[in-house]
Image (cartoon, rainbow, N blue to C red; front, top):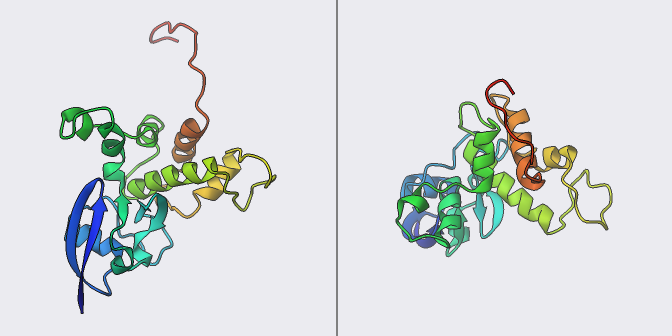
Length: 195
């Protein structure tokens, strides 16, 4: 049995017909043509298919597409474009090449190797930062009454649903930490290649 549903993916409306048993991951990849969410384990254990679904991080391999008719889906592919659209003219080169701060941090900190898990890692990090900003505790949160401090243990726990087979965890942790706890700009002058 087929169903027709409407999805807003990375800021663009799509109307697609899917079998009612189709996962959101398969609908995104096969019907909409958005391939940044990856099919890793197809059992909700690796996080490669993570997207932001109505503002919350979500594993798309574990949910049926028909359950999300009318949903807003943001993939890693659309994160930067959506953030830049507020400041630039849609369709411009600046919008198409824009990066979300988490994406920039992953590049700056080498938070990837093969890149297969990276779109899911990035979406999970963006969602996790939003959850922490709203005060949602995790398993390792020490003081449930206080604001959540994103220590390395907090970041590791909150990102634990996303696996990296290459082992880029150090760079991923550094990237998320950079966005979670931005440093004050340094006032020390740079002295060249030997510095």
